[in-house]
Length: 155
Image (cartoon, rainbow, N blue to C red):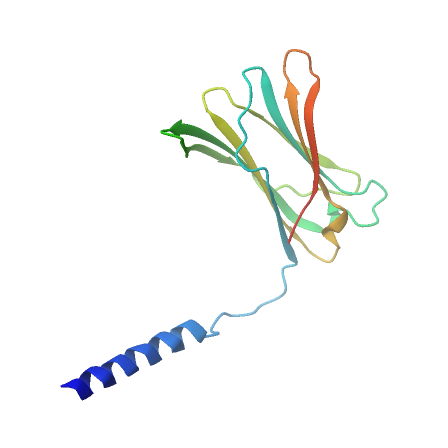
């Protein structure tokens, strides 16, 4: 009986190792470098909005011109017992930027306790290191920028 259990355990572990090490993924044409940026969960004041803008170098040296697409995800969270739960998520259509172009999205907190923005993209044939994401917290009454974060798109 002990021998059957040992054999069964060895056989089960072998199958699990085989499944974990299987490289059965089909490798087609390279799709470029995937990049992303995440603001994290941000709590805004009642008269503030979150603006996220994505742009590359205006001279075209290495900008988002080679991007197959960029997608922006706008999320709203509600707080329940000190835990923020996702209440709303809106994803844009795929956006293709050309040389000298930029895209931005404004996020109001309105009915949410906190907001978040995620930028995802796929760069094909260019170096995405000069693409920039600018995050601003703006006072809606005075139109003054309260905070700024300038970041890179990371693979």
